[in-house]
Length: 65
Image (cartoon, rainbow, N blue to C red; front, side, top):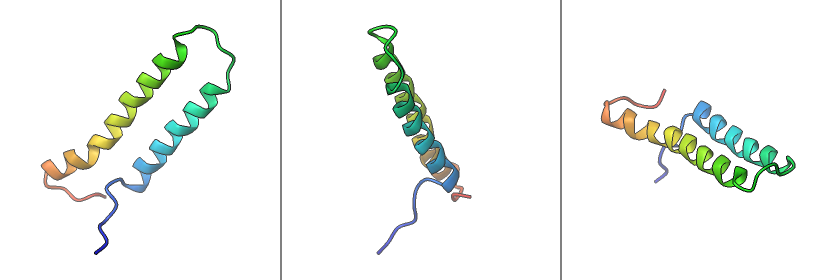
């Protein structure tokens, strides 16, 4: 039994964009030893915001658009 995807296409695109941002950041020359860790932490926060959207929809009784 196949289940519906949890993320909408737009949410999936946003997640892919964050992955692209990480790859682009890694290609930049290092300016400070903490930059990579801080950027990663920021991306994880953004990913969590996107990943909580399906749960919020469920709690609000709404289906994915």
